[in-house]
Image 1 (spheres, rainbow, N blue to C red):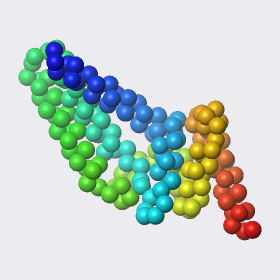
Image 2 (image 1 turned 135 degrees about the horizontal axis):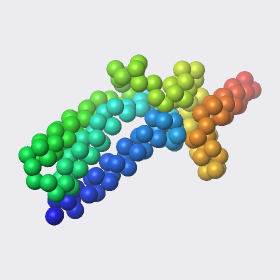
Image 3 (image 1 turned 180 degrees about the vertical axis):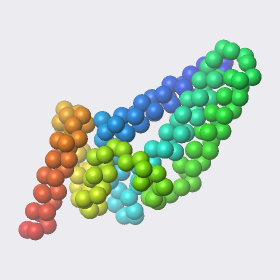
Image 4 (image 1 turned 45 degrees about the horizontal axis):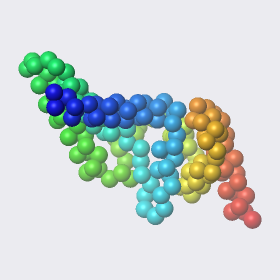
Length: 168
C-alpha cells in the first residue's frame, strides 16, 4: 500500500512529461524550444527528445508496475526493466553535452518548425526570435502554438526587423 502511494506521483509526473513531450514533438507547444535559443555565450543547447522520452518511459513503466496490485514475477521483471531504462537514459541525458550533436538529429526532425528555423537563421536571429516570443501576449502565443505556418511567418518578420536594425 505504501509503495503505491510512493509510485503514484512518479507515474503522474512521467505521464505529464510524456504528454508535454508529445505536444512539443507535434509542434503544438513551442515555448520550451524557443527558450533554448535565449542562451548567450557558449554553444546553443540542442533539443534531445529521445533520451528524455526514454527516461520518462522507464519511470512510467517502473511506477506503473509498482502501482499494480498484482504480485507476479512478470510485474517485478517489468519494474526492474523500467528502472534500468530510466537510469540508463537519465545517465545519458546527464553525461552527454547538451550542445553536442546527437545521432538521431538526422532521422528525427520533429517538430518541423524547429528544424526549419535552425536551417535558415543565424544564432543571433534565433535569439531575437526567442526574446520577441516573450513579448507576445498569451493569446497570440497560443495561436502560434497551433499554427506552424503563421509562426514561421512571424519569425520571418522578426528576422526582417533584425536586419533593418543592423542596416541602420
